[in-house]
Length: 140
Length: 140
Length: 140
Image (cartoon, rainbow over all chains, first blue to last red; front, side):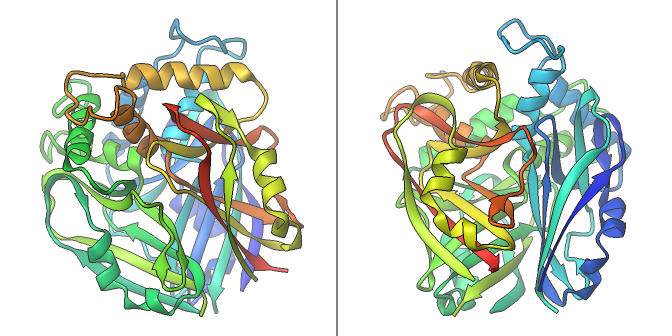
């Protein structure tokens, strides 16, 4: 069983955002999989996807605090600066977290840990809506 | 052919640990795959999985040295501090290395490079046993 | 439909290199997939793969600038030094970016974003040709 579709994640401000429910609602095919996997690819190079803690907003805040220090806006060793001070850091942060996720599915639901959720990592100040290609496959 | 099961990795002290053999022993279905993939997802947000050098313990030691400097325990810009100084760094280190791996399988064995092994990255001082969902799929 | 093969990526100097076309040419089976995925695993621990911006060489230059500062050659806290000052940083950079990629395929072509390309991240000064195991699977 193979399903593939393109979905859109709502625009978010720069930062880390929990989107597990938004992804589930956009992919009803998930319910048909008895055992399988769901692959997500964000079709951008300045936003990314990761799995992390789904409970405390503090965790998402601290993600931003760390990444903004580790990859500073407007660092003087960057040469790719025409698209703004937040552009080149966004590319690097994207590769540090990753453009894709593969998640196990069991009996029509994600088989994640209790505290795991999907983060949309928005690295631009004004990134807009983000396109994601979702591929669901497995046994129905 | 689809097999999915939950396994447990033994408790490890904080650091980077080679678990290739432990994973192989826990997933006998690997032997049935002629060509396929094995997907691993660690169901936690303060431990992670990566592939790296399988020979020298020095490499694993230096991984810890670098990550502990890059994401310092108890940094003053963290607000999520109730669960201990090692908790918020553990979340960030987890997303830098990643919660899942996809490995090629050929003739019943991992098709890794000669020097590649699976690391359990334990980012908490006392993380305990770690659960991993393993999904094996392909042609038998 | 399952295809698996080992390909070689041409030797590159240390840095970040766009290899989307080189991968496409080496995997003609891509054209047979109506809907599916392509998995890539680089069989090394001092080079890695990531998706990022496919247009500006400045971006690839700035990736090197950032990674070389974040994981400095010959840092005094590294103990694994016998293979050269660039060896231990190469291992860490590899796990920060990752040894594998999973890419969606649609109608025989990668379903990437307009600005996304595959980077070979070469972290050694003289890494040589790099082996990649490619697994294509899906519906034909």
